[in-house]
Image (cartoon, rainbow, N blue to C red; front, side, top):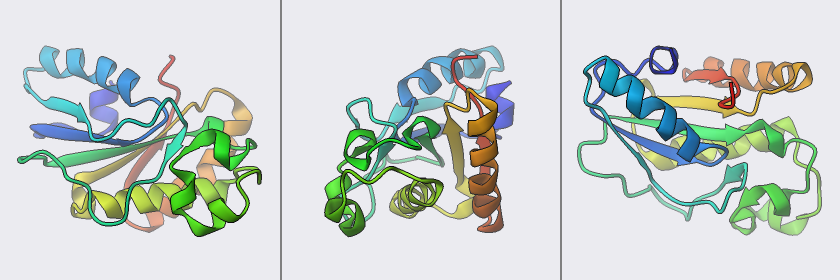
Length: 164
């Protein structure tokens, strides 16, 4: 189900970027990949210390050779919490560093996701976005505006809770 939702058929090596549930996502995708015989390899590109969001050092990320897809994972649980508490390496973004106690809003989350997409250095058709932690109706509503913006940018994006 998740494999289909993320349109991973035909992919061989998938990087998991961002934060907000990469380990859980990998744990769910590996058996699905094995069941459908795809033999896809999933790996986390960076660690984030359990934060919902993550920024990366400037410049493109170093992905494994052969990476043909990247999924940017962001936790909707960041919304309404101080930036410093929910974003790994928040100080890399000038606005976040200036006001680390400011509450994360949908615009902040969208900006972080877009930065992760750019850092991946892959064409749009090889990128996916998963907004995790869509555990409540309110978070689904907030996610819908973010999803629309990402889809308008030409990205494949979805929201759900990996704790199904």
